[in-house]
Amino acid sequence: MIKVKRVYEPPARDDGVRMLVDRIWPRGVAREALRLDQWCREAAPSAALRRWFGHDPKKWALFRRRYHAELARSPSAWRPLLEAARCGDVTLLYAARDPEHNNAVALAEYLRSRLDNA
Image (cartoon, rainbow, N blue to C red; front, side, top):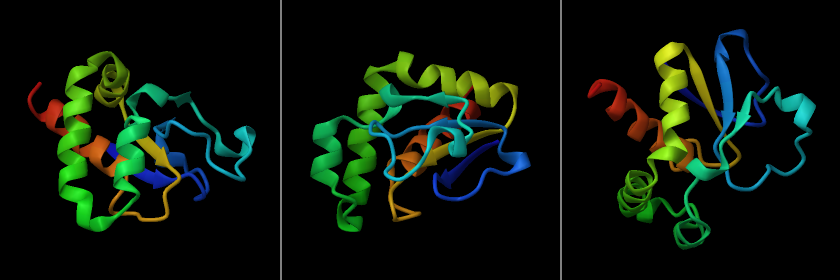
């Protein structure tokens, strides 16, 4: 199972492997408190795409398409996450305020589609 969780929420037993999927370290979070298994910077959207999106819900559909296209060009960035999900639970951690319109949600959607096609 692939879950999505904000970094500011406390770790839970059922999180499984906890992977930060933001390119930038989240503000105000100590590494120890995050209980992170892996920081997957390369799986995050490019800086240019992130700046363009700016977490604007009106741009969400186009952001997802562009981000999925970036991911398709860089399978080495997301393949470790997919392999971890095949072995057990994975929680993708993100820092954005919007729980519905963020890169972790779009990445989880992309990974789930790859799991379903495997």
